[in-house]
Length: 206
Image (cartoon, rainbow, N blue to C red; front, side):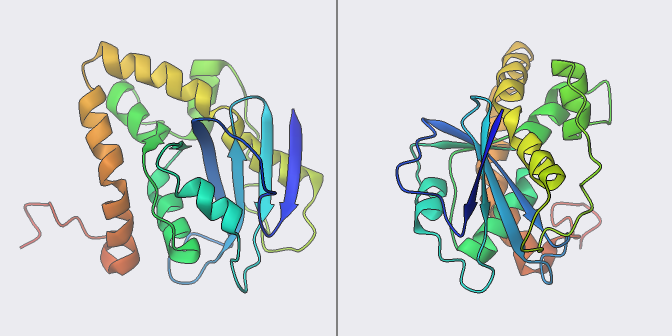
């Protein structure tokens, strides 16, 4: 595994092919308060690129061009949060999207454990360390442990996508998964506009 660390933006010419795994690290989980600190990317080749954001300007044209490229599929785990944060701070709209957490919930109905650590253990027999999950991602100098943790969140998403897609196809649930993925930018907009904790589709919401 190689980790490539970049300040402020991706270098020009980095090629991720037709699909890129994406994750983010923020100062916390508040859509109002907590700013984007890192964006992690992988082509599924065992390498990870980590971009430490300039949180004053978010001037990153190469990264924005990649994320906004409709010819490149973006693979997330829990895309709802990442898509919202990237829209808020980078003002980028993303499609197409694949979310391994949504795919897992649609086909691994025998469990309520849909975290990335759970998926990697069951489907890939890989134990992910979550020791650095609660960490100061706004620090200018990141530790090797932080970088390794951040990279691990994207290194296995391509493998998980292949396995989960096969299961979606087996259970005839691929089309409903695709519809969920296409709805994610709207779900993110609802979160950003104050409906994060309100189910507007609920019968009790009247």
